[in-house]
Length: 393
Image (cartoon, rainbow, N blue to C red):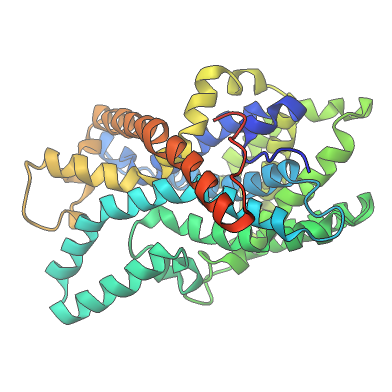
């Protein structure tokens, strides 16, 4: 098997997917804006339209899941094309763990003082201890989203998506093995079904506590990425596939409109939203506009650091807030936006700059070196030799 490739930069030489790395930055930025924009405090009156646009930024979580399935499928397209190879599967899991866990653990430890203080100031000592141990262990082992929707965000909130991704990584070899056997008609049918199921799951009212943040609900979204990648691998070199370069612009327009709630909610609009996300990723992979901008060196760097940007956002925010409020002893998790820097428009951009600076430092000095170390040590332990150094960091 050829040298492993585990991110967009590493497979760019074959498929020119650098733009998808840049897309990751804007997806992380949209989630950050959804969490910390305080538009209502910048204008005289609350604006439902502006609030809905901000809430619509959370669609970027779906972008991450579809993008994950898409990139992994292209990077490991040959892993399940023949007889199952357990060494190849172990290499895949080691590479994924080495990529995600160092910064994940950093975010867990950094956020710990804030969540523990919140627990012990708002609940009895016994209850706070039990909750801290339960949620802490679940987060350390990346299973918080497998328990309940509320449990998923009981520690470092953004980490719930990594818990779901972990489930996807565990089953990915089997998903890929089944999907690589499908012909074009089968792929199109499976993609249509997954779009409908994802649209239905996103549009219905919550039925269970873990309706939203769990691997089962999100699995169709991840499978969409796998299907799109299989179609891309079949079609991207065909002359008639040039139409795909036109897909990003209408895709972005529709995603913006439907998530700003300017269209009625329901299964079909949500289904079209997922189709639009797939079209955006497919179009950028096909070098559609603005792939050149998104694939520029600066966007590549920001995209590579977007994982740290996304995962550390709450830890950075509450650290800044603690300083902003002059080191209070009270529970700052209960602070309102009116007390925080983002009550000023410039305060939001200050938070953004600080978060980005921290993310770049974490990527360069923690994520990148520890990734190589873990690949070496875990590779030696489980497959008897170090994993190759990633071609592009």
